[in-house]
Image (cartoon, rainbow, N blue to C red; front, side, top):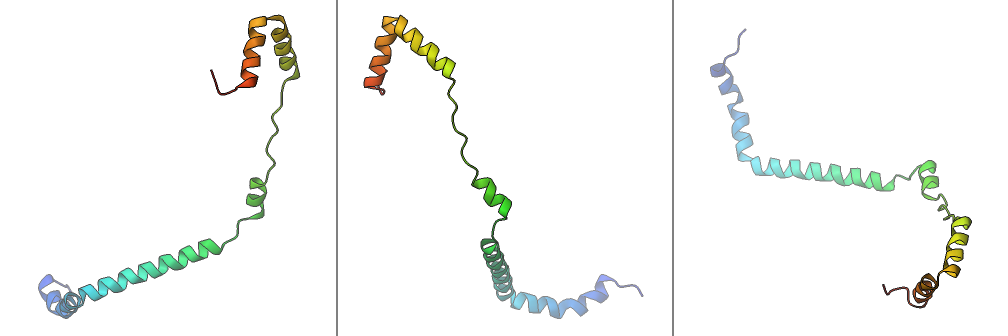
Length: 99
């Protein structure tokens, strides 16, 4: 049994007319169905709790800044040896927002 377009067209014509008649309603129904699915999916995503590993990774303590004491000692030694540098540091301490 071989189907051709001429024999198939009369059989599907009622479905085509029904679809044309109610096209806007079917489109609205499909749009609302997709919208409902997305709203429910987003609701489930909001209610999901993060895993314990994710919580612990966010709560890691901040690494403390380590200051090299040798560098601090060298800067203070150089400051005490040079008068211009000493006055520059004094200006910076008094008003740090000027250049």
